[in-house]
Image 1: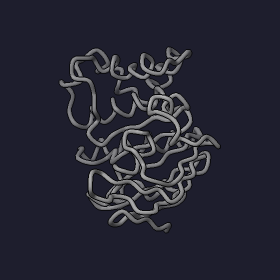
Image 2: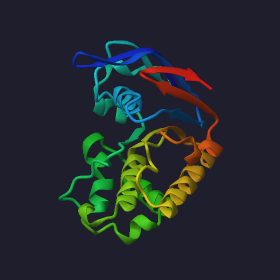
Image 3: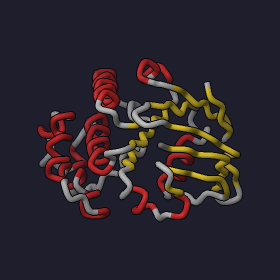
Length: 214
């Protein structure tokens, strides 16, 4: 489903990713593991079109993504959950979840929203609250729900369990297990393999911008 080959990305004068290759098959969950600063976020942002790649290829189900702007990539069914959530502060939680509907257009968004609330029932409880009123863990759940609104084919998750209480980290793991069981393809970037190792079909380790499969 996702085939990245020889990807190189610079930010300003600094080379962040060097000749990175990775493959995610349909219905798989693949780990992208590395310490803070290793290049995990840069990789996900490059896949989504939020950072420009210097060279390489990124194919999603046969479509070359480097030729597409970011919103077109999301329109292919790719959901992205950034590490810092990026919720819109003056919108409610449900309005944040629905932002992909307004930006890329989703015909069946009402059914999609109902499915998300079934998967993450906690989101129903705080859907009318301002996003700024939520705890860090609740914000992570809201950001995941927003990614799911558009990510009906593949999810890119950046540190979904980082900085949240153990109980919510466990809840996040349970949700990801349910998504995997439903056949959603997931690429999960984490600094700690203990949070997701049992769910992974394969793993890539990134160190100083270079990657190897494990």
